[in-house]
Image (cartoon, rainbow, N blue to C red; front, side, top):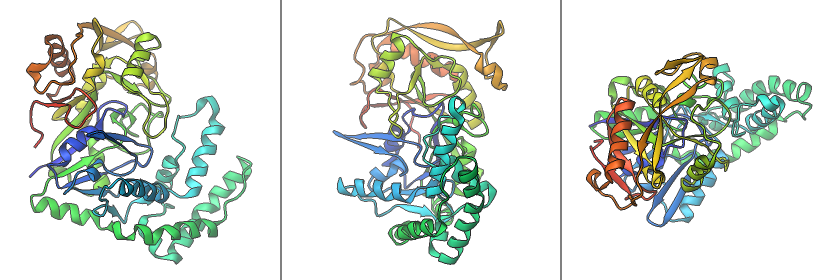
Length: 427
Protein backbone atom coordinates (compact mmCIF):
# COMPACT_ATOMS: atom_id res chain seq x y z
CA UNK A 1 0.00 0.00 0.00
CA UNK A 2 1.22 3.53 -0.72
CA UNK A 3 2.98 6.12 1.37
CA UNK A 4 1.77 9.51 0.16
CA UNK A 5 3.19 12.99 0.67
CA UNK A 6 0.74 15.88 0.48
CA UNK A 7 2.17 19.41 0.48
CA UNK A 8 1.58 23.00 -0.58
CA UNK A 9 2.83 23.91 -4.04
CA UNK A 10 2.76 27.70 -3.54
CA UNK A 11 3.34 29.85 -0.42
CA UNK A 12 1.04 27.85 1.83
CA UNK A 13 -2.67 28.28 2.61
CA UNK A 14 -3.55 26.29 -0.53
CA UNK A 15 -6.17 24.15 1.20
CA UNK A 16 -4.06 21.23 2.41
CA UNK A 17 -6.48 20.59 5.26
CA UNK A 18 -9.33 19.92 2.85
CA UNK A 19 -7.18 17.59 0.77
CA UNK A 20 -5.84 15.72 3.79
CA UNK A 21 -9.30 15.38 5.23
CA UNK A 22 -10.59 14.04 1.90
CA UNK A 23 -7.99 11.28 2.02
CA UNK A 24 -8.21 10.79 5.76
CA UNK A 25 -11.02 8.27 5.58
CA UNK A 26 -8.93 6.06 3.28
CA UNK A 27 -5.61 6.12 5.12
CA UNK A 28 -4.43 4.60 8.37
CA UNK A 29 -2.00 7.32 9.52
CA UNK A 30 -1.74 11.06 8.83
CA UNK A 31 1.64 12.52 9.80
CA UNK A 32 2.71 16.14 10.26
CA UNK A 33 6.43 16.12 9.47
CA UNK A 34 7.55 19.76 9.92
CA UNK A 35 6.54 23.19 11.15
CA UNK A 36 4.62 24.03 14.27
CA UNK A 37 1.62 26.10 15.25
CA UNK A 38 2.64 28.70 12.66
CA UNK A 39 0.71 26.61 10.14
CA UNK A 40 -3.05 26.48 9.95
CA UNK A 41 -5.58 24.23 8.25
CA UNK A 42 -9.29 24.87 7.93
CA UNK A 43 -11.44 21.75 7.51
CA UNK A 44 -15.19 21.95 6.95
CA UNK A 45 -17.20 18.85 7.93
CA UNK A 46 -20.90 19.28 7.27
CA UNK A 47 -21.85 22.56 8.92
CA UNK A 48 -18.85 22.42 11.27
CA UNK A 49 -15.62 24.33 10.64
CA UNK A 50 -12.41 23.26 12.36
CA UNK A 51 -9.27 25.41 12.51
CA UNK A 52 -6.24 23.20 13.16
CA UNK A 53 -2.84 24.71 13.88
CA UNK A 54 -0.57 21.98 15.21
CA UNK A 55 -2.62 18.79 14.98
CA UNK A 56 -2.68 16.72 11.78
CA UNK A 57 -5.90 17.09 9.80
CA UNK A 58 -6.44 13.34 10.04
CA UNK A 59 -7.49 13.79 13.65
CA UNK A 60 -10.99 14.51 12.32
CA UNK A 61 -11.21 11.16 10.51
CA UNK A 62 -12.45 8.24 12.65
CA UNK A 63 -10.18 5.22 12.35
CA UNK A 64 -7.17 7.30 11.31
CA UNK A 65 -4.16 7.66 13.62
CA UNK A 66 -2.80 11.23 13.63
CA UNK A 67 0.95 11.59 14.21
CA UNK A 68 3.17 14.56 15.08
CA UNK A 69 6.56 13.58 13.71
CA UNK A 70 10.07 14.31 14.94
CA UNK A 71 10.47 17.19 12.48
CA UNK A 72 7.69 19.22 14.11
CA UNK A 73 8.27 21.79 16.86
CA UNK A 74 5.63 21.55 19.59
CA UNK A 75 4.27 24.26 21.87
CA UNK A 76 2.75 22.16 24.69
CA UNK A 77 0.27 24.84 25.74
CA UNK A 78 -1.05 25.17 22.18
CA UNK A 79 -1.20 21.40 21.79
CA UNK A 80 -3.23 20.91 24.97
CA UNK A 81 -5.53 23.81 24.14
CA UNK A 82 -6.22 22.45 20.68
CA UNK A 83 -6.87 18.96 22.03
CA UNK A 84 -9.23 20.36 24.66
CA UNK A 85 -11.14 22.35 22.06
CA UNK A 86 -11.67 19.28 19.87
CA UNK A 87 -12.67 17.12 22.83
CA UNK A 88 -15.30 19.67 23.81
CA UNK A 89 -16.75 19.36 20.30
CA UNK A 90 -16.94 15.59 20.55
CA UNK A 91 -13.84 14.74 18.51
CA UNK A 92 -11.92 11.68 19.73
CA UNK A 93 -8.26 12.68 20.10
CA UNK A 94 -7.08 9.61 22.01
CA UNK A 95 -5.23 8.05 19.05
CA UNK A 96 -2.81 10.95 18.64
CA UNK A 97 0.89 10.03 18.67
CA UNK A 98 3.74 12.49 19.28
CA UNK A 99 7.37 11.73 18.54
CA UNK A 100 9.58 11.82 21.62
CA UNK A 101 12.23 13.38 19.37
CA UNK A 102 10.10 16.39 18.40
CA UNK A 103 11.45 19.65 19.78
CA UNK A 104 9.63 21.78 22.33
CA UNK A 105 8.88 25.47 21.77
CA UNK A 106 9.90 26.97 25.10
CA UNK A 107 8.69 30.32 26.54
CA UNK A 108 12.10 31.86 25.83
CA UNK A 109 11.88 30.82 22.16
CA UNK A 110 8.65 32.80 21.85
CA UNK A 111 10.21 35.82 23.58
CA UNK A 112 13.28 35.78 21.34
CA UNK A 113 11.09 35.50 18.22
CA UNK A 114 8.97 38.51 19.13
CA UNK A 115 11.75 40.84 20.23
CA UNK A 116 13.89 39.95 17.21
CA UNK A 117 11.10 40.83 14.77
CA UNK A 118 10.51 44.15 16.52
CA UNK A 119 14.24 44.87 16.46
CA UNK A 120 14.41 44.23 12.70
CA UNK A 121 11.74 46.86 12.04
CA UNK A 122 11.12 47.33 8.30
CA UNK A 123 13.56 44.48 7.60
CA UNK A 124 11.42 41.99 9.51
CA UNK A 125 10.79 38.55 8.02
CA UNK A 126 7.10 38.49 8.88
CA UNK A 127 7.17 35.55 11.29
CA UNK A 128 4.13 34.58 13.33
CA UNK A 129 6.01 35.36 16.56
CA UNK A 130 5.29 31.89 17.93
CA UNK A 131 8.89 30.84 18.54
CA UNK A 132 9.21 28.54 15.54
CA UNK A 133 12.45 29.91 14.10
CA UNK A 134 14.32 30.17 17.43
CA UNK A 135 13.29 26.60 18.27
CA UNK A 136 14.68 25.26 15.01
CA UNK A 137 17.81 27.36 15.58
CA UNK A 138 18.23 25.74 19.00
CA UNK A 139 17.81 22.34 17.35
CA UNK A 140 20.61 23.04 14.88
CA UNK A 141 22.77 24.59 17.59
CA UNK A 142 22.21 21.44 19.69
CA UNK A 143 20.74 23.28 22.64
CA UNK A 144 17.14 22.32 21.91
CA UNK A 145 14.64 20.73 24.29
CA UNK A 146 12.95 17.57 23.04
CA UNK A 147 9.67 16.05 24.18
CA UNK A 148 11.52 13.15 25.79
CA UNK A 149 13.48 15.61 27.97
CA UNK A 150 10.31 16.42 29.90
CA UNK A 151 10.64 13.02 31.59
CA UNK A 152 14.12 13.55 33.05
CA UNK A 153 14.15 16.65 35.25
CA UNK A 154 17.92 16.66 35.62
CA UNK A 155 18.55 16.62 31.86
CA UNK A 156 15.79 19.16 31.28
CA UNK A 157 17.28 21.57 33.82
CA UNK A 158 20.76 21.26 32.36
CA UNK A 159 19.51 21.90 28.84
CA UNK A 160 17.36 24.91 29.79
CA UNK A 161 20.25 26.45 31.73
CA UNK A 162 22.63 25.91 28.81
CA UNK A 163 20.20 27.50 26.35
CA UNK A 164 19.57 30.51 28.59
CA UNK A 165 23.26 31.21 29.20
CA UNK A 166 23.53 32.79 25.76
CA UNK A 167 19.92 33.94 25.33
CA UNK A 168 19.87 35.98 28.52
CA UNK A 169 22.99 37.80 27.39
CA UNK A 170 21.21 38.72 24.15
CA UNK A 171 17.93 39.65 25.84
CA UNK A 172 19.52 41.89 28.48
CA UNK A 173 22.41 43.47 26.60
CA UNK A 174 21.03 43.75 23.07
CA UNK A 175 17.29 44.03 23.52
CA UNK A 176 17.21 45.61 27.02
CA UNK A 177 14.85 42.92 28.30
CA UNK A 178 14.81 41.10 31.62
CA UNK A 179 16.69 37.84 31.97
CA UNK A 180 14.56 34.69 32.03
CA UNK A 181 14.86 32.45 35.09
CA UNK A 182 15.72 28.84 34.21
CA UNK A 183 13.85 27.36 37.17
CA UNK A 184 10.60 29.03 36.10
CA UNK A 185 10.93 27.62 32.58
CA UNK A 186 11.66 24.14 33.94
CA UNK A 187 8.67 24.31 36.27
CA UNK A 188 6.35 25.33 33.43
CA UNK A 189 7.60 22.60 31.10
CA UNK A 190 7.36 19.91 33.77
CA UNK A 191 3.74 20.95 34.26
CA UNK A 192 2.97 19.70 30.74
CA UNK A 193 4.83 16.39 31.04
CA UNK A 194 2.12 14.11 32.48
CA UNK A 195 -0.61 15.72 30.38
CA UNK A 196 1.02 14.82 27.07
CA UNK A 197 2.71 11.58 28.20
CA UNK A 198 -0.15 9.31 26.94
CA UNK A 199 0.55 10.51 23.40
CA UNK A 200 4.36 10.23 23.35
CA UNK A 201 5.75 7.32 21.33
CA UNK A 202 8.54 6.04 19.08
CA UNK A 203 6.76 7.22 15.95
CA UNK A 204 9.63 6.29 13.60
CA UNK A 205 9.29 2.65 14.58
CA UNK A 206 5.49 2.73 14.47
CA UNK A 207 5.33 4.31 11.01
CA UNK A 208 7.89 2.00 9.45
CA UNK A 209 6.13 -1.05 10.91
CA UNK A 210 2.84 0.29 9.58
CA UNK A 211 4.27 0.51 6.06
CA UNK A 212 5.71 -2.98 6.37
CA UNK A 213 2.21 -4.14 7.33
CA UNK A 214 0.74 -2.57 4.16
CA UNK A 215 -0.93 0.30 5.99
CA UNK A 216 -1.53 3.57 4.13
CA UNK A 217 0.43 6.51 5.54
CA UNK A 218 -0.15 10.11 4.47
CA UNK A 219 2.57 12.68 5.23
CA UNK A 220 1.16 16.19 5.57
CA UNK A 221 3.34 19.26 5.13
CA UNK A 222 2.63 22.63 6.69
CA UNK A 223 3.25 25.93 4.84
CA UNK A 224 4.25 25.50 1.16
CA UNK A 225 7.09 24.88 -1.29
CA UNK A 226 8.04 28.55 -1.68
CA UNK A 227 8.41 28.83 2.12
CA UNK A 228 10.94 25.98 2.31
CA UNK A 229 14.12 27.01 4.14
CA UNK A 230 16.28 25.63 1.29
CA UNK A 231 14.06 25.91 -1.78
CA UNK A 232 11.81 28.86 -0.98
CA UNK A 233 12.07 32.64 -1.40
CA UNK A 234 14.81 32.96 1.22
CA UNK A 235 15.01 34.75 3.64
CA UNK A 236 11.23 35.18 3.58
CA UNK A 237 10.64 31.53 4.40
CA UNK A 238 9.81 29.23 7.28
CA UNK A 239 12.51 27.47 9.32
CA UNK A 240 11.95 23.91 8.10
CA UNK A 241 11.44 21.85 4.93
CA UNK A 242 7.81 21.54 3.80
CA UNK A 243 9.03 20.11 0.47
CA UNK A 244 8.74 16.37 -0.14
CA UNK A 245 12.25 15.58 1.08
CA UNK A 246 11.28 16.96 4.48
CA UNK A 247 8.81 14.11 4.92
CA UNK A 248 11.65 11.60 5.07
CA UNK A 249 13.73 13.43 7.66
CA UNK A 250 10.74 14.79 9.57
CA UNK A 251 9.09 11.41 10.02
CA UNK A 252 12.00 8.98 9.82
CA UNK A 253 10.85 7.14 6.70
CA UNK A 254 13.20 6.36 3.79
CA UNK A 255 12.56 7.89 0.34
CA UNK A 256 12.04 4.48 -1.25
CA UNK A 257 8.85 4.15 0.82
CA UNK A 258 7.22 7.18 -0.84
CA UNK A 259 5.01 6.20 -3.76
CA UNK A 260 3.12 9.40 -4.57
CA UNK A 261 3.66 13.13 -4.01
CA UNK A 262 0.59 15.35 -4.24
CA UNK A 263 0.89 19.13 -4.56
CA UNK A 264 -1.94 21.40 -3.48
CA UNK A 265 -2.50 24.37 -5.78
CA UNK A 266 -4.94 27.20 -5.26
CA UNK A 267 -6.62 28.31 -8.51
CA UNK A 268 -5.01 31.70 -7.89
CA UNK A 269 -2.09 32.61 -5.59
CA UNK A 270 -1.79 33.96 -2.05
CA UNK A 271 0.93 34.50 0.51
CA UNK A 272 1.16 35.79 4.08
CA UNK A 273 4.08 37.78 5.42
CA UNK A 274 6.88 39.66 3.71
CA UNK A 275 8.74 38.78 0.53
CA UNK A 276 8.48 39.02 -3.26
CA UNK A 277 5.21 38.03 -4.95
CA UNK A 278 5.23 38.69 -8.75
CA UNK A 279 1.48 38.33 -9.41
CA UNK A 280 0.30 40.24 -6.32
CA UNK A 281 -2.72 42.46 -6.98
CA UNK A 282 -3.33 45.84 -5.38
CA UNK A 283 -6.59 46.60 -7.17
CA UNK A 284 -10.27 45.62 -7.03
CA UNK A 285 -9.49 42.14 -8.38
CA UNK A 286 -7.12 41.50 -5.50
CA UNK A 287 -9.69 42.67 -3.00
CA UNK A 288 -12.38 40.52 -4.65
CA UNK A 289 -10.20 37.41 -4.44
CA UNK A 290 -9.52 38.16 -0.77
CA UNK A 291 -13.21 38.70 0.01
CA UNK A 292 -14.69 35.82 -2.00
CA UNK A 293 -11.95 33.40 -1.04
CA UNK A 294 -12.06 34.30 2.66
CA UNK A 295 -8.34 34.93 2.51
CA UNK A 296 -7.47 35.50 6.13
CA UNK A 297 -4.77 33.44 7.85
CA UNK A 298 -6.11 30.60 10.02
CA UNK A 299 -3.26 30.98 12.49
CA UNK A 300 -2.26 34.64 12.16
CA UNK A 301 -5.59 36.31 11.43
CA UNK A 302 -3.72 38.45 8.87
CA UNK A 303 -5.22 39.25 5.47
CA UNK A 304 -3.48 37.22 2.79
CA UNK A 305 -1.87 38.94 -0.16
CA UNK A 306 -3.68 37.83 -3.31
CA UNK A 307 -2.68 37.47 -6.96
CA UNK A 308 -3.37 35.53 -10.12
CA UNK A 309 -2.20 31.96 -10.72
CA UNK A 310 1.56 31.68 -11.28
CA UNK A 311 2.47 28.76 -13.53
CA UNK A 312 6.21 29.43 -13.10
CA UNK A 313 5.90 28.66 -9.40
CA UNK A 314 3.78 25.58 -10.11
CA UNK A 315 6.41 24.18 -12.50
CA UNK A 316 9.09 24.82 -9.90
CA UNK A 317 7.08 22.98 -7.24
CA UNK A 318 6.65 20.03 -9.60
CA UNK A 319 10.40 19.85 -10.09
CA UNK A 320 11.71 20.21 -6.53
CA UNK A 321 9.08 17.90 -5.02
CA UNK A 322 8.87 15.30 -7.79
CA UNK A 323 5.09 15.85 -7.85
CA UNK A 324 2.98 13.08 -9.32
CA UNK A 325 -0.39 14.86 -8.95
CA UNK A 326 -2.04 18.18 -8.19
CA UNK A 327 -5.12 18.92 -6.11
CA UNK A 328 -6.52 22.24 -7.41
CA UNK A 329 -8.51 24.11 -4.76
CA UNK A 330 -10.86 27.10 -4.70
CA UNK A 331 -11.77 27.00 -8.38
CA UNK A 332 -15.20 28.31 -7.37
CA UNK A 333 -13.68 31.61 -6.19
CA UNK A 334 -12.88 32.54 -9.81
CA UNK A 335 -16.54 32.35 -10.90
CA UNK A 336 -17.69 35.69 -12.30
CA UNK A 337 -14.59 37.00 -14.09
CA UNK A 338 -14.97 37.49 -17.87
CA UNK A 339 -11.27 36.86 -18.35
CA UNK A 340 -8.75 35.34 -15.95
CA UNK A 341 -5.05 36.24 -16.25
CA UNK A 342 -2.52 33.45 -15.72
CA UNK A 343 1.17 34.17 -15.28
CA UNK A 344 3.05 32.00 -17.79
CA UNK A 345 6.50 33.61 -17.52
CA UNK A 346 8.38 36.55 -16.01
CA UNK A 347 10.03 39.56 -17.55
CA UNK A 348 13.37 40.31 -15.88
CA UNK A 349 15.55 43.14 -17.20
CA UNK A 350 13.64 43.07 -20.48
CA UNK A 351 14.08 39.31 -21.00
CA UNK A 352 11.39 36.63 -20.88
CA UNK A 353 12.13 33.98 -18.24
CA UNK A 354 9.98 30.85 -18.03
CA UNK A 355 11.58 29.18 -15.00
CA UNK A 356 11.96 30.44 -11.45
CA UNK A 357 15.21 32.42 -11.23
CA UNK A 358 17.66 31.19 -8.61
CA UNK A 359 18.78 34.75 -7.88
CA UNK A 360 16.86 36.48 -5.10
CA UNK A 361 17.44 39.85 -6.81
CA UNK A 362 16.07 38.63 -10.13
CA UNK A 363 12.97 37.17 -8.50
CA UNK A 364 12.40 40.40 -6.59
CA UNK A 365 12.35 42.33 -9.89
CA UNK A 366 10.34 39.76 -11.86
CA UNK A 367 7.27 41.12 -13.66
CA UNK A 368 4.51 38.66 -14.61
CA UNK A 369 3.81 37.86 -18.25
CA UNK A 370 0.11 37.04 -18.49
CA UNK A 371 -1.98 34.91 -20.78
CA UNK A 372 -5.70 35.68 -20.70
CA UNK A 373 -8.12 32.76 -20.36
CA UNK A 374 -11.91 33.04 -20.75
CA UNK A 375 -13.86 32.98 -17.50
CA UNK A 376 -17.28 31.61 -16.53
CA UNK A 377 -20.31 32.84 -14.61
CA UNK A 378 -22.07 29.57 -13.76
CA UNK A 379 -22.19 28.27 -10.17
CA UNK A 380 -19.83 25.28 -10.00
CA UNK A 381 -20.24 24.38 -6.31
CA UNK A 382 -22.63 21.51 -7.12
CA UNK A 383 -20.42 19.95 -9.80
CA UNK A 384 -19.70 16.27 -9.10
CA UNK A 385 -17.64 15.42 -12.16
CA UNK A 386 -15.27 17.24 -14.49
CA UNK A 387 -17.90 17.22 -17.24
CA UNK A 388 -20.28 19.10 -14.92
CA UNK A 389 -18.00 22.14 -15.04
CA UNK A 390 -18.65 24.91 -17.59
CA UNK A 391 -16.54 24.54 -20.73
CA UNK A 392 -14.41 27.56 -19.86
CA UNK A 393 -13.77 26.21 -16.37
CA UNK A 394 -12.71 22.90 -17.89
CA UNK A 395 -10.39 24.75 -20.26
CA UNK A 396 -8.91 26.73 -17.37
CA UNK A 397 -8.12 23.54 -15.43
CA UNK A 398 -6.60 21.87 -18.49
CA UNK A 399 -4.45 24.93 -19.23
CA UNK A 400 -3.14 25.02 -15.64
CA UNK A 401 -2.41 21.30 -15.79
CA UNK A 402 -0.40 21.66 -19.01
CA UNK A 403 1.53 24.67 -17.68
CA UNK A 404 2.27 23.09 -14.29
CA UNK A 405 3.76 19.80 -15.40
CA UNK A 406 1.68 17.24 -13.48
CA UNK A 407 -1.90 15.95 -13.80
CA UNK A 408 -4.66 17.63 -11.80
CA UNK A 409 -6.34 14.68 -10.10
CA UNK A 410 -8.86 16.52 -7.90
CA UNK A 411 -10.60 19.91 -7.92
CA UNK A 412 -12.11 21.81 -5.02
CA UNK A 413 -15.33 23.59 -6.00
CA UNK A 414 -16.35 24.73 -2.51
CA UNK A 415 -15.17 24.65 1.11
CA UNK A 416 -17.19 21.59 2.18
CA UNK A 417 -15.81 18.10 2.54
CA UNK A 418 -18.11 16.87 -0.25
CA UNK A 419 -17.45 19.79 -2.62
CA UNK A 420 -14.64 18.08 -4.48
CA UNK A 421 -14.37 16.59 -7.96
CA UNK A 422 -12.12 13.53 -7.99
CA UNK A 423 -10.70 12.88 -11.45
CA UNK A 424 -8.07 10.27 -10.58
CA UNK A 425 -7.85 8.39 -7.29
CA UNK A 426 -4.80 9.18 -5.14
CA UNK A 427 -4.82 5.63 -3.77
